[in-house]
Length: 315
Image (cartoon, rainbow, N blue to C red; front, top):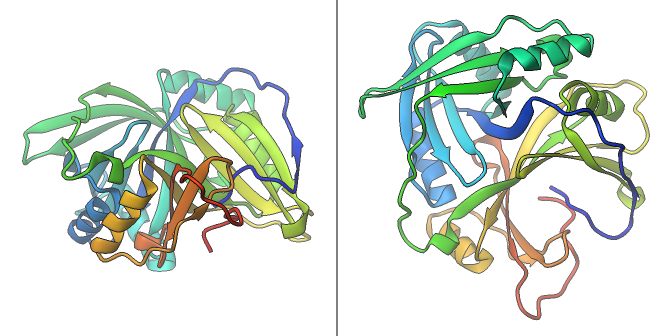
């Protein structure tokens, strides 16, 4: 995972028309064993989930972890349904990992109009329903899927929440050691210009920065939406045979990087040492082994007197 640092060439993009999408509502991670994945994620984030429910018509079950600027959804097949069938096929072919990105909107129908103006033909808006039987709670929403043939391999959709919400969960232990928010999600692109058109021109996300790192042969697009960044990484030179995109990793914000690292190590995770972040004034550490198939980075404020080579990636 990357960030702005010396040694790159910047290109700031012109403003794009306003979009009905105003935040990265949530990130969906596909998992096989929901109970085990829930336990592992609670240890990783340092917080308990606020929702464990089912989607009776979709054939899936989920666990939700709310954060300051988004929420993380663990999704597993459960019962019979079209989404569960597709999820099971994805798990069989690719294993666990980031499955989809959901962007928040107040107007799912209006987002569909934007996609049609951009030359895409989305399906109709669909109603969704989830239930948390243990709490007797229900949530309802409307979604609009970006046409799969246009989403470049990473399922993307807009969600308009209609009823029900996620309750805040009281943290156990030191709050400064827990994950507070999502800083950015990393997507590897097989064709950066196609990805730029998708996220910028068609979805309407703001391209805040276009940076080339000549020494690494990489170009990175930083799309800002709400309080998060969608970071799209690809080769600086266009490939001869463009490929699909792949959602790869998540970078989480913490208030105290030392306390967060110690908490993770105590919980049994293999954690790297702390090093300077690519963004000045930050420090980072990586969780090795890609828990649940997700490359994972923690980002916190820089440490007094801390010096060294900036982190260029999770590796």
